[in-house]
Length: 335
Image (cartoon, rainbow, N blue to C red; front, side):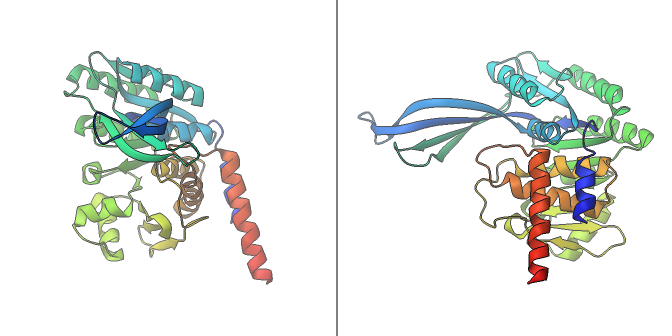
């Protein structure tokens, strides 16, 4: 299986993936705690640097690019500094942003994480500040987005819908995605934080366990996850489960549990789901079975959670992880 997985990863190059969804600027403000303020019982943070990285759909697109695919990102950003910086970081990652729509007067969704520590201590997150659009986007911009979906889908090997609650992919946009995907026989992979039930009819989805349990209102069973897949009309449902790995629910198959790859103690889970959906989608577009695509995605998630901040996974790292797992397996069998 490891050899086949490597063959699949080596064919990611040039696979064109359309990523449609909420483009978010993930910012990390680093600073040193120097003293306590005289104005209030709070620490004074001496600013060192602020880094802007792609988040949400933008991070899924960045992962597609670093894994070797051609990532085309469709969505909205505001006409603000954070939108400009997000475009710049996406361009540096090799993401095609020519149809990322700038909405005049809108705010680019931004998550600013303040990382603080004393001089020789590790920087830790002390607060997160979110900047969100204050008003809904005008229908004309949705019309432009739908036009871009129709224009680019025919050349795509797969489509990712990345929904983080900012309503980029509403009913009309998803209807357009479903229509062109059906016409051109393109798989649609959904990663939705809170609206998974709104994306019935997609090919597959990659929720985490918490998102599934929010749907049921309690801890989910295997039968419930299988019924959710059927309810949504999905071919498969890939549920990620943190340190316990992930489980694949597939039509006409028993659930397949995959143990976590690498350490069970993650450094930072920020953006891990984006790496999973990117690797999973690329593997499917390269001809992998759902099971093999899930195994590849499991490696990508294992790499992502060992990086601080919103990181991306490269194809080289993915191949190395697969090789290390193969070597460890061979060693255990010999002993």
